[in-house]
Amino acid sequence: MGKQTVEEASQWLMIGPDSIFDSEDKEKRVLCKLPHPKNGFVSLFLFQETKMFEVIKFEDKFRSWLVEDSVQSDGSLHLLTTFDPIFLIIPYLRKAVKEGRYMQLEDILVDSAFPSLRHLEKALSHEALLHICSSKQSADILAYKLDEEKLLAWLKRKVENTAKHLSDSNTIVKPGMSANFVHTTTQAEYLRAAHEFVSDYISNNYSVKLKDSLGIKDKENVKETAIEPPSKKQKIATDGVQSGGDYRADKSDSKPAKKVPVKRTVAQAKLDKVDKKGMKNMSSFFGSKK
Image (cartoon, rainbow, N blue to C red):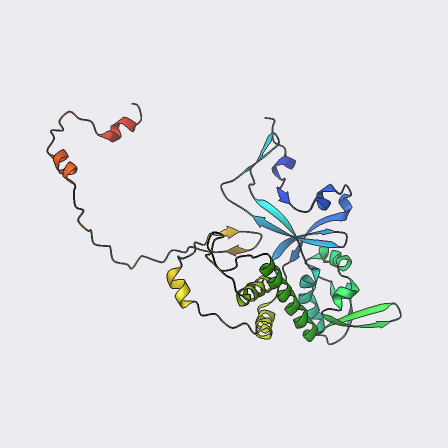
């Protein structure tokens, strides 16, 4: 195996649509870092002309990839999923609305910390912006302003369409349920799951408003948590985001458990009476040679 170069060491394993990888025009593919619409953390997105994709990273500490005749030490897996750019512009529209006036799109998408935000302008159409904005046009100037009622209605449609897709595909959304377990998912469970998916891309304030608009009530899962085993959370470090933690409870104050006497079998009792002089312990056969 030849010496691994810097380019080979920095390559990624990525899964996405064939149209992205088949295109020979590299200028049509732009990979950039942008603030996540939920919390502002730095996240990776890919633009291909008017299309936008989110780069989702799955990583495992003890894993690597065999790529042709080389070994890729970075065993992470990157998935490209289609992304609606409307989610990304919502935080910037909220900032612009504080000024109480209509603004052009090129003025709204200004962030000194993320100059790559300019690529979002090509991915956003006028028709798409009208789903969440009101607009004014004068000569060749087109300005927008966030409309809270339109935004909430658009988010509600997103949840309802997602819930319908989950229902049509018979996706199991109940935590702890496997595909082999027969369970009938109700429409309320699909709606709740869809709301959680959409809430991953909006602020907590909008999530609460959306939940009330959909009529989703807080579930009472006291009985369910009593019979379901606790889920193990694993620490996963990503670009500026760390989730999960140690699922085990603090046992520093717990009292040591009392030793329960083990009942010996008849064979064990007879073995105690055997003369063991000259016999070697079983572990001695597996020790290192002197």
